[in-house]
Image (cartoon, rainbow, N blue to C red; front, side, top):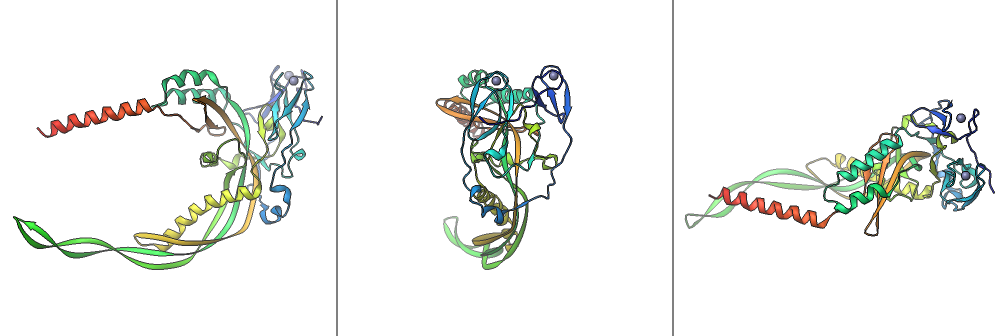
Length: 361
Ligand SMILES: [Zn+2]
Ligand SMILES: [Zn+2]
């Protein structure tokens, strides 16, 4: 059995859970409030990536399931290998297991929840309700089927100075005239026309990009395609890691190790670098043949980000819906109803032919 932290009310002994939007713990029974002292994370903080990856432990996060014994109801339960905070499944007692038991890297910061569960539920319901082209049967089912789970998800934030050399071609438009044979009244005559052509020249050079807090996922619970959506955080509200923010929520340990996370970050950075190279090439058109990037002064930090997560099953497939727990923006996967789409296309075609008939009269 392992030791865990449980936040308990001094007045009545009930659970103290993190009170969303209040920077406090609050007793679920008597309402006693225990403020958390503000401690903003220094966003310039960054650990040295090179030094960190010399430690093999950062590559493959260990997967150990911990067995806990609930001090409230006495039940024993397993904490999943990727989770370090949760509620007892039998009595809702909040437990936070020290990260050090499973990971060498502790989160540096935590972005507190600001969106309440009832707001998240409303968001999910109106999203389902507004799904155009979704199979009708889905809507009723999905609304009742799933609850919504408040979870902190590990996210990596990378800094880097990137020097890139490139080779490519710059294309400039120019206008010229050409003589083309044209039929006029049955006779072929030569006509002069102005056309736009592109002159291509080889171009190579070097560009520099400075990256600050490029966010990538540390969890495999959500698919990587959610990453773009999940990188939009107001990081200035990040607090130094404190277990109190986790009380009453689920919190995940990172499953994507440091080198894999940095590869994801490089993909994100390359999109910006390619845009910089295009600007540097200039002209009306650009072709990029090759980019060679050197990543220097790479730094990172590990953050916990708040999310409300729901999912529903439809035709044996799982669709996920995620709400940013800080700003309430939402992103969901959705099924499409083939019948409804085909129906709309038929309708548009029918309308199109009616308009065509009128136009020709
Ligand atoms: Zn109390
Ligand atoms: Zn319990």
